[in-house]
Length: 487
Image 1 (cartoon, one colour):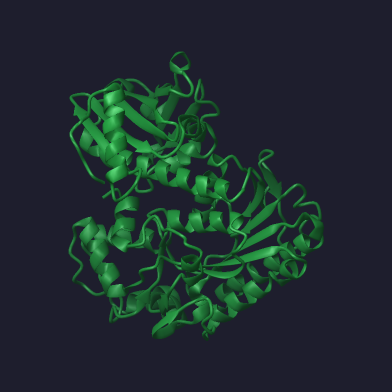
Image 2 (cartoon, helix red, strand yellow; image 1 turned 90 degrees about the vertical axis):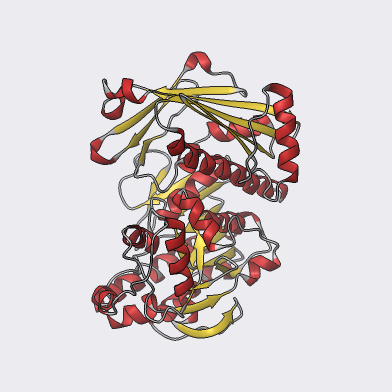
């Protein structure tokens, strides 16, 4: 992000920001930062009208989209209103951060304010007095299509700790608004979307993105529904009325592939995907007049564990091995929906990058401790994707009607394991000179798991997305890691 000295307040300040933003190589990412004795002010211009920006903050999912993934917190409750609602974050050690919105400061679409409130944990005295937190969210119209977003925080927390969080928040806001504008330009209005696996790493991020766009999300769950945002889903025998009123289905549920490749594990991986997917597809096929869209998770395991340096596109032949067989049958299970006229997209996902899950969640502590290193020779290709780019792809699969069949959900710049190791260590400012002993992955995954997961080499290209003109938020690994790790 480019930096500049603080601009004067008012119209002159907005004009400086607007001009700088237009000249920036990364539109919407030019920021003015002011550090005071007691807090921080951070502002940037986003390419959206003020009312649209304010509405984004007022919708469900905004708090989740703005919470940095590297922080050890969990969103327990989101404020129902910016006027007088309360949001609760759960912190380590049983502490809670309670953010109360000030009704007297609520002035849509110009301002809302939250402060640390009562309710225990960090919100209790005397810690509340020591921490002190009052966050003013201001929105100033630059012109009809641009808004200056200004965060002012009065707190004892050092500005050096706050700045990465606000850099992250402003990038998220600008990129999410852009994603919604692209969808709206394609005629994609508010719809009802059912999601399986909505509480997982991908599902929770995707749900938040969709709800901030004004869509209604129905979570298909296996437990008793908690409210009207959930419906009970039996993967073996789904209710014929499960998809009533639903315009699109995103199917993410499935047993984690990570684990030792025993007979039981392989059976769970396979059975959690093939049958449930086919039954959902059959439900969609039973009502062809609805013209639903089915977006189903898939994996680059389709290409097999070792394709050397071959550049793999959606037209490449499938590979061999257990995962290739599972993915092929998984995608084939969506056939009933496609044959009935539904648009079906199979999202072949690479290695998802997020400190909240996947391989990065396991590797980050090791690399932070200086114990990270390459796997094997380090020459194997790793096709990766940042979590926010992945949910952008799912979002696009909903609104871009030119997409159907398999699409490779990977960044356009795959890296070798040795390069991945080097970049991650560089971002974390740690050495990475010790190779991982071969017995470690073999002990955790078994021989087959090592071949198909730890040492798999897949150099995958997102050819279909490239042809569609898709723009990635973070096409390069270092930028993606810096964003999600607050570096």
